[in-house]
Image 1: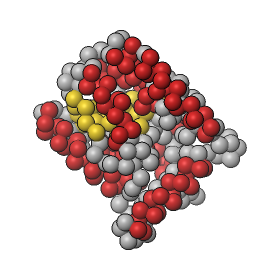
Image 2: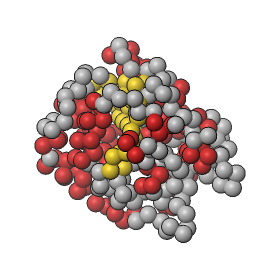
Image 3: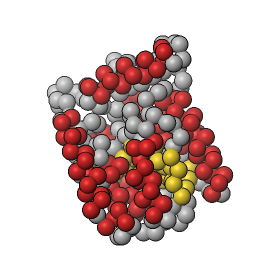
Length: 268
């Protein structure tokens, strides 16, 4: 069983997204207020205009926003991917604040459409929880997905800032009660849609993958945002919230998208 699966099935914890260990203290959430600096740096960087990154091959790249963010949050990256030669697609999940199993179904439909439209497997870039949702889809649809790139996604264990945990639990529970008329167990080991177990499954070996993370992450413990194999990890600095706008992340992303080497080492 891989480390992520081990974390998700521990009987002593009922919550999928957990606060950090008390001995370590909560991550400095206030650092996230500097996310606008990432966006400004992107606008001032040559990378934003496609300089210093390999040209794309016209393949489809689907962008998936993080928790409580809409597809619009990834629009800057969406436009950049088109500028450097890819065919970008928004995830189609709308707002990432619903049952992740339902969101995974919406993303799967987008992946199927992109694969049919381009005639080849697609790549996915997932920010934070969006990376876990993308992983869930990649486990089920390896024939339609060639690559998965995580941006600040908790891969080893799903520890998050306590305020994020509280807000997430409240929003998802409210969606379950008031939209679907039933109690929601999303983000817990009592999840009834099967998302929790499926998201912990190892990726198929045909799906290349890599992680982009920042040690200044104020939302997710940066130790958890890394692949098992060091070669698959790329540190870029900046904030968690600003990773979809981070010029260093864009430069790394441009090169990872062109990497054709097998990247299943993290599952060994």
